Structure formats: structure tokens, C-alpha cells
Amino acid sequence: MKTIEALAPDQASLGAAAKLTKRSNWPRLETNEQLGLIWGECQGSGANPYRVAFDARDHGYKCTCPSRKFPCKHILGLMWIGATAPASFDRVDQTPEWVNDWLGRRRKSGQPPTPAPASAESKSIDEALRPEQSAAVEDAAAAERREAAQRKRAE
View (tube, rainbow, N blue to C red):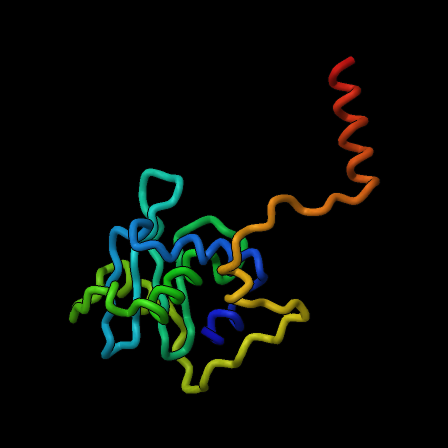
């Protein structure tokens, strides 16, 4: 779980990933334990599920979603399921073609992976599991701008 916290770009990503740990979001979850790989398909808002893969040996990952956060919530969710519910994954000997393509395109270096730089922001899985707060506290200036915009629209 510490790896997930370390790789997460921010606390919001952890919170979003927590919502993706339900098995119903993942029509496909598979692992090849010999290769240290887990992958799955996560149903997003589009017609086709996102294809998500994670290499536990060097923390490499791939997701087909358009997120600009790396790793995205789908990768974090897949890792989270792998850490907390490994029995959810079907064990297979053959990796799908799309996983093989990704593996073939990855750079091969003899060096161990370098850890991501530590973020100044603290990230916590425990915090991601807490129920959401009702509403963020709004500063007075933001409230005034919102009320002024409402008045203007009403006119």
C-alpha cells in the first residue's frame, strides 16, 4: 500500500482510485505471476473499457484513458485491488496481445527503477477511504463572486 501512496500524484487520485476498487467496475482482471504483471479492463464513461496494465517488478504502468495524471486513478485502482484482493485476479499463462505490445515498447535497461521524487503533499490511503466531506469551505471572496454572477444572470 505504501507503493500506491508513493506513486499517486495527489490525494484526489487516491480518493478516485478508492471508488474503483469495486469488482463490478472491472469486467476483466488477470495476472501472470511469473512475469509480475497484473492487468484488467475498467469500465469508464465510454463504450469501451480502459485497458490497464501494471508491472510489479519495476512499477511500470499503462492505461488507455485520457487522464493527464500519471499514474491515473485506473492504475492506482488496479494496484489497490492487487494489494488488497489478489484473489480477484484470474491467473493466466498467456498475456493478451495489447499487454504484449506494451511490454515490447517499454525501454529495457539493466538499471533498477529510480523512485519517484517525494511530493511535498502528504497522500494517505486511509484518508482516501474516509467518507467525503459534505462541502469544501468556501472563502468569502469566492462566495461573493458566485453571488454576483447569480445576480447578473438573474438580471
